[in-house]
Image (cartoon, rainbow, N blue to C red; front, side):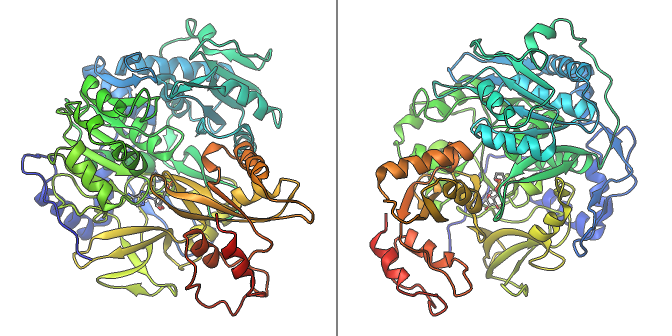
Length: 640
Ligand code: WT7
């Protein structure tokens, strides 16, 4: 397969061109430690680090450490250091659900809001190392809440507002949080999301001492005396400065829960120094953001993309970052492009699922808006099909704006494989090449390293500063999940092809993680929600290709004796998943079957289920290990 190559557009001028990129790669090869210490100089350190990385992937109980003797505060790096010369610069542009009803926040204002929040947290007894949940809409107070935690050394854990109270409760319990920051309600796509009420439901399963509620809509919400306070009631009395804690580089900054192939979501732990260096470095390298740019990453802060490229990366680089609390199709399919014109957005970063959904609505929604401010486009979250890439490049970007297809993960803290917009020729559908400092390899099933053009599993052979450090409360699971498949290497969970030019083409997850609209769903979590229904005996969940979402969820379900599978039960089961996890995990297809294909040892053969979900009727490979091969025929007749 040879794809058309797009050179860097002629008029695109970036700080990093081909020569600068080559120099970065040479610098890393020559002296990795010096290279990494050099990147750390982007930050203001309370105590500058003298060491770069100190890590091993090979032993259980190992530690990954970066800049270990350094001390810093991330809120200082995002705010304080910009104030003397740039306090009046816009830090955030809040773009609310209803077009034009947002506001802008300067660096000084965000500093003051952060300090107020930090002082309130302190007054409530929250201290360094405590865990604080953030369950909020995309409003500036959410960024201030994250930065306030960073300022006092509390560890934040942001939970996407689309997760159910059950999910929130599970996360609160897992990290033993002592505070939840939320809003009365969220508003998205014209619909109201009862955030505070969800928090109340979650806290019935395990309470916390403090709930701070920001007023977003003014809706009357129940407040529990002694526990719940309105931020607005306290705000006026809170001081607008707050001394920052000097954090050790390896002190945890945040926990972010993400789905894996087994069990309940893992608390991915990122620490202060290394994460900060990597978010700041990659934002600078890949987005080439300058004084007059307006940067818009459409992700929610409930995901890692929102952490690294709505809040921390842009603010460390003194950029102007758009915080969008809406959806791509409200009030109409032109929302993105109308907003880009109104705000003068120059750099736009979104997900393939949104691009595909908008492409389907026709070019007119795009072309009726000028988009002349745009100079750089990016995508993230899942493989982008070449067709959607071409549409993004040609229709949205008018063939002028480089497209950076950025591959990374919650675990990696920031981008690892991507073009440099001013230096790397692009191939639609390829994230191109690993960034300087990132050592990627392809391996076969036995772990043998593959050279040259090849297809295999993507692993990383050395650490980088933004790498996650552990699974909260379960270091053994960290080792087991990422380092036990291929001894001494970090296994990404992704399959990948490398072409003759050394370009990487991510083909998607090779484990039981399903990527629905760029959101990670673990099949085990959905299965456990389904079997919690009293009529269900067993469930097996796989992904299948979906035009818009990339992948959607296909559930095979066996019922208890005497139960009948019908559309009413399908609705109940979908409701069960929404209740236990959230709407984003709802199956598209539910297939009732008398039995699941199992080996004689009782292991479900998902390979066969994936094929059936994809609509295949033959070519199931070796089925001789099945305990009962006739199960396959029964499955074929019941396909949804
Ligand atoms: C998984 C990580 C990184 C922030 C958003 C998702 C897939 C991500 C790409 C891309 C192909 C991609 C991978 C990865 N993925 N970006 N540009 N091309 N696949 O973070 O929820 O941790 O998911 O998303 O499968 O492993 P996440």
